[in-house]
Image 1 (cartoon, helix red, strand yellow):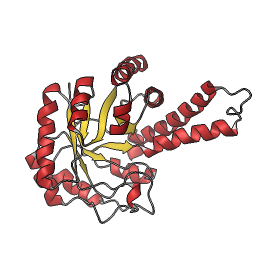
Image 2 (spheres, one colour; image 1 turned 60 degrees about the vertical axis):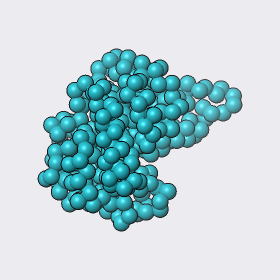
Image 3 (cartoon, helix red, strand yellow; image 1 turned 45 degrees about the vertical axis):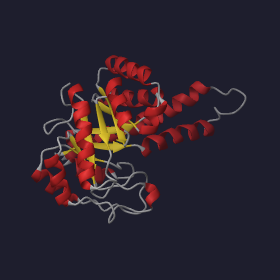
Length: 278
């Protein structure tokens, strides 16, 4: 398989999904915007979905919609899951050994590359620790990657994508994020490996556009925003009365959820248009 993310490739938003319905909404948005998309499954979602049926749907529906939807296994810590994703046709995997020592992270990452590279699967790995909303931090301090560690990591591994902790966090931000743009610039000077930004939810359009100016930033992950759009769809269903016992119509509920996810995704994808980056 050709590398869908490379130093010369387009930039992507990657959206975490958990079902055929959520994947359909994201693909519909990508089709409306006429651009390719990345569908990400967390370890929990990957474990629960029917992988063969899910894969078959994505491949069939992307063809129907005239775009390419790449499948990515996000933040995986289990080698068995990575092996299964490779066997089930996923296009890329992220090995997250960022909680280990740097040398352990390098060794584990190299094992993953050796395991899946022969199948043409791309490998993403993390340096530093990208915090989550449960950590009660905005972004700075604990977890920020060290440039020396990043340089050693990329020289010691053969990864396709680098997720470096530069100040973003997973989930919703408590306060204003302090993004280390200087690190994005410095990383771009020492390597052409595509950079992945985790924690895209909660970043303003201005921040996202500023990140997209850096040509080495090739992938920005969106997870919580998808869940919030799902929640808004349910809330709108309640407000519109379609959840009432008399006349309850689950199809209408699904429509509201689909439209909320689709609209959110389209609004993000609009930022990739060249005129948005001026």
